[in-house]
Length: 297
Image 1 (tube, rainbow, N blue to C red):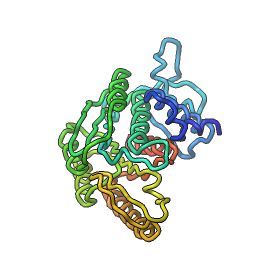
Image 2 (cartoon, rainbow, N blue to C red):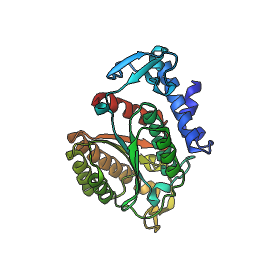
Image 3 (cartoon, rainbow, N blue to C red):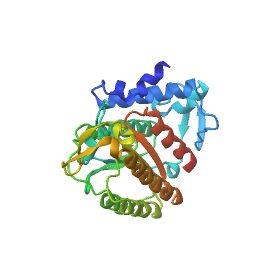
Image 4 (cartoon, helix red, strand yellow):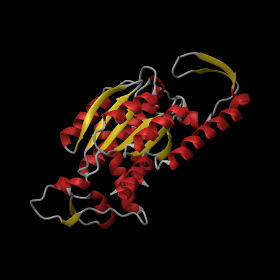
């Protein structure tokens, strides 16, 4: 379908401006909803009424329009608004790609930008946190077009660098939050799995909803290597020589065990765990957000 090209990383990579990337991703996603409605997917607000002349077009519920082809204005009770934080790992390892058009970092900020665009247009407050070993940037949630510009500006000017300590950064984020929020974390999760899970449990125990987007390069997820290779440690920069054919089975098993441990542990705490690689269309992440948003309201 024509709309699917706007959801492919290889196409979006050719668009230079992050704001336009976000708009194209959302456009493709909305066209996809219209073409193939999600059965059983409903969106409920405190009140709907038909759009009338004089209403602000920004108040139109585009998700409802995608399903009904009718314009409705959404109105929220202030206490039901979902306050969200986009938490993006900007450490050096996120700058890796093997043969895909986008690095893990570029892929992550495209998803984050699209979600920010979607949340602002749904009148949900959204903020931003970027981190490596600690929180680097922090923008408090707001639901304004100016907020969207500020978030996109920060994301556009980031360069992945430095080592990472995900557990320490998430613990710092948890200490920053003053009200219950939806925290959407984008990371390759390179670090001690037990420490990472501990910090996620702390975040969830404080009453926050969490979506964990585990972003891997396509090569990290599928290991398409053969023969003698020098593998680069993404954090230290050290070269590690190895025969790819000999270690493939162990690598795939270790990755699967790692992901299963995270997935099972997150499920116990009702944390949403989403596996993504840089070859996956962007709509998978957007659907996860909208589904959780609908359930939590």
